[in-house]
Length: 436
Image 1 (cartoon, helix red, strand yellow):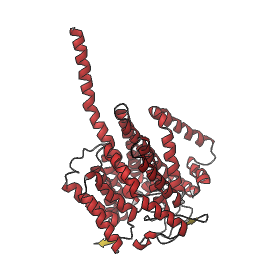
Image 2 (cartoon, one colour):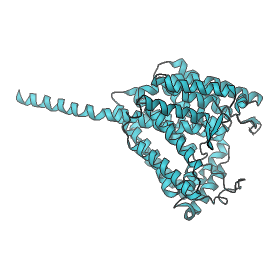
Image 3 (spheres, rainbow, N blue to C red):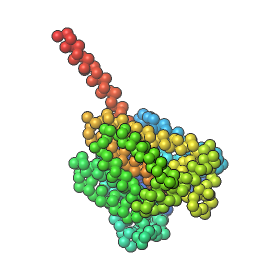
Image 4 (cartoon, rainbow, N blue to C red):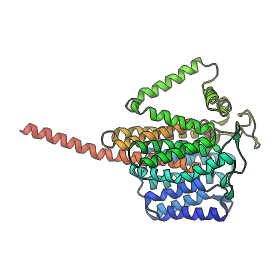
């Protein structure tokens, strides 16, 4: 660690520990945006990266304030817990090595439950988004500077020093470990700022945040962030059809079936076609999925480490580059691990849909936020066919799922209390009319 990293870690920890609940998450975002994984200490063979230190501070805070005890578990929470435990236990049993799995479980569970405890309602998100618009401005400026000069200012904190290029343009990294995660961070923030602009509150912050998020996406010069950004826009465009999403879903299924019938190659080679437009290595991702399917007998029970023949090129460690979350889940935890991940994502979509119906008439602003969260989740689901999240961005991924669990639970748990009152009132009116 160096003095800059230590200072930022202390500042982030103080925010998480002592700030009011609605401000505490700014400490987490501060650490993600401005502290690299080069800032770490080794304790008993366990690497405490900066974000793990901040998560530990968050755990101390939610335990000390009793915020964790206030949680009422829902089905999203239980599936997340099952996935985190099962996937890491299976991988640990297969490898016979537990240190890395402990670290992975630490990242998932602490990220999720710190966010889950600090965000308790959709109003918390409404308060958080304008602050994030201001927070990411320096990151956008740093990445614009990196794109113009090729110099990453975060190198002073042990950032990724090697320059990345594509077609003569720098692929900017910022505080992250690759252009994929830095760009996806910006791309998945964009819909939130669109929502902030449309609710006609603090519009100037929304515009500033939108410009910064777009700059972060653009300067990453990576196909994954571009796909996430475009998916977010497509999701927003479907807002007028939000009451008829059942037909939309069946339309997507029918389209995929139709493509599978007319395409000469398997359906997953759609990624290769998409990369012809967006750029990137879509063919490699398609080939990876094909090989994963062809070798299902090798991984379905407990996963496998024998992936050397899955990729078009073999990595230095002898396996394939599993740059696809779903393939990675299959290789790490077998068919059950893959099913749990898919179940987690579908539960999130299901809860968002149910909460939207509850909020539609009474809380139109919250309905808009729920739709935007669905757009962001849709962007993640699509881009995860091209990348497996790593570095500190994992913290925001699991935290985003926790945010969905919190805001939907807040709206859905309030619905039963209103509905019986309405029925009682209706029956009382009818009874009075009958007596008259």
